[in-house]
Length: 601
Image (cartoon, rainbow, N blue to C red; front, side):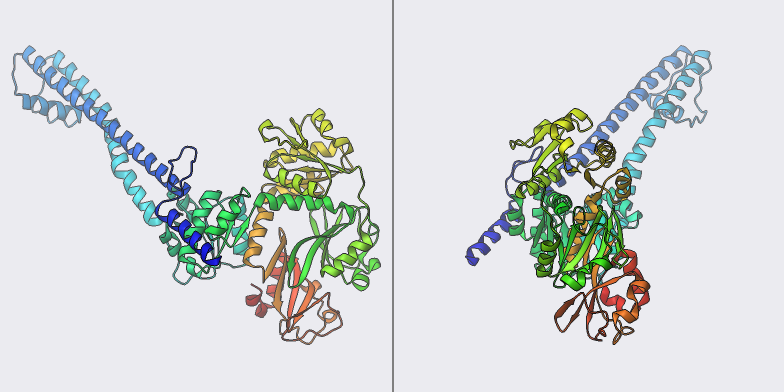
């Protein structure tokens, strides 16, 4: 079996390298990969542009030769009118010196007609040469020189000492968020770009970038892929397949994370060499659905770290509402650790005085058994008539619908584009800004509204509109960019998930799963050895939260995880702490305990 699989992978590699898989791509040639087609398209565009330049130059030269001929003949005619005669060479000489404004004065006309003819030749030649000479200089001297200069300026390889770095093959909102996270965590990265103009622009903006074709093995050698921690292929499915295979050939040990738009591409990408395939639309859709499913009070796991499950649970409708964490005593009764509380996008680290209301979402850290006990204690019956309206039938909206359908929940997707309708009976086609369309979708009886379009301006508009129509309904909105999250909260959303933040977190967690878990934008669970200043002291003594705004989730000692540790027990010197905090809190921890910083990162 393994031998057959190895043979199949080898045959796939041979076809991709020597004779790329023959696929029909709109606008492309059969028998080539997408990256080869893109390279050939760029080559064709360049050659077509050069041909246009040469044709223009040819036309200008023909016009110039015609003007010289006509003016030389005219010179002979006017000189004959004045009763003088010159050779044809002299006529061409006079025409060129006059057109170029040199005018040596050795041959001149004596009559008014001759002087008028001289002015005509002078003006015509000057105007024409003002057009032709700059064109020739710019197109055939200056531009090639600038292109070579930019090519020399564009980095084509990374520093020879770079290692454990991140290689990124696309630049979009998700990748920009991933780069921000890498810079914040002091993880080196390099962005591979195959467009020269884009490389120089990004280089000038301060990004670590190199120039190279994404299907060329030498590009990844120049990026030191063999020493990298991870390669991220986040282009289209076919391009990602080529990238994954190219990298796996030259650096078989490096971890490759690829994104996939279609489910069918997952197997292909894995065979090509991808270690992990992520469907970003599905990830965001699942996260948005979880914010809706949490209305029954049950916990929903969003990640695992150091033997603990990190979960979210809504307080709305449960016995938690109106009580403080000190009153509830969840740690003492159920063993569940409360990391903190989300309230309309604002995260508050858990303290005894934290009061829970209908909008509170608890962030929990516990074992599966402890979460099961929590669900038994606080889950509530889901209303039979619960209905959810999803605005936007794109990848994210459809992913939300699939998750809700798996949970047996009623939902309707509002989609403006009729061609996106699926034969499921869950669609209403129309503009979500039209109240009659929302009424047909069941907004008046909805328990939640999910706004999933990829346009942030539209999402803000629809969030404000839906909040006005349904003041008590829970609204979960999607944001394409992190900077619009706060705007959507102000518009009335109860929960907002950033596409770039959520998806970059999923990629980041693949890189740092053993060191850092990015729970949400700006909120991290991370581990660090017990700083020597804290060894032998108890959590009650060190007041870690007051000093750094970080909370201790667990203590790991000799391979054993103790979740929600006893605050009175001294910390062993050879143990590791598992902490949670915002990005700013993590930075404060590193500043407070600089000797632990290197291992935290």
